[in-house]
Figure 1 (cartoon, rainbow, N blue to C red):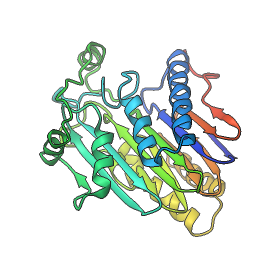
Figure 2 (figure 1 turned 180 degrees about the vertical axis):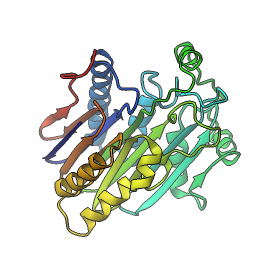
Figure 3 (figure 1 turned 60 degrees about the vertical axis):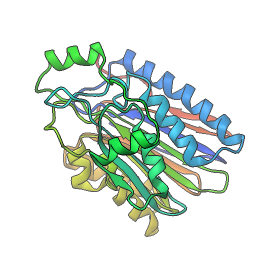
Figure 4 (figure 1 turned 45 degrees about the horizontal axis):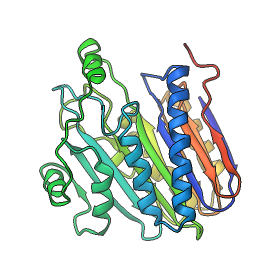
Length: 299
């Protein structure tokens, strides 16, 4: 459980690799996840400094985490009660305040690519069968997301759940905000269950603030976490205070979730009510500002 606030200079990248919820990472797993986020944030910063579009860089970050089976997004995602992984992803552009996402995608390794494409579509949030139709239209390969490790966990831990999710926030050189989130769900849930990630409770972005949440989705939706923090910031509360107030409410309710948040002035916030959350904050001026540590975690 922790909350950390700060201010960055210039272009900023924030990443999270999941709050763990009821399935917290060990110190070794947290260190490995943080190392991956560091590599991705470094690559993302190079792209942004070279003039790449902020939305495209956010998708790059999400794709990189979707390709890494240590995260619960894309390859190696959690399995629902029927043994099928169904993925959810969302993107939001603060400059246009446009939300787009896909829900319950199957046999697609990069739902974030589909969510990015829908930014300019007339129908901006799709579930099945629209998700699969869009994937074929974009020539996304049909792939199996199942890994032996995840299948073994599903067999051995039926009834238990996890809820890692990955997220990315970008603050561009002009102060444009972008938010993206991708998840494989919590695991063992009823087929058809909708994650918070493709709702404004889990992913939200405006010209005021950007937020990506992770943790137990039903709790995130109940508390409207991302939209609540953005509203408080838009209504004049400093980001640190908006995040602190939301954190105190979450703690008082015994919630298990976390988030990363940023505003156009460079202020950022990282908070989680779980034992740990993997994250990295990097700016063009100051380099790596903050990253998750394994200190104090159970072995």
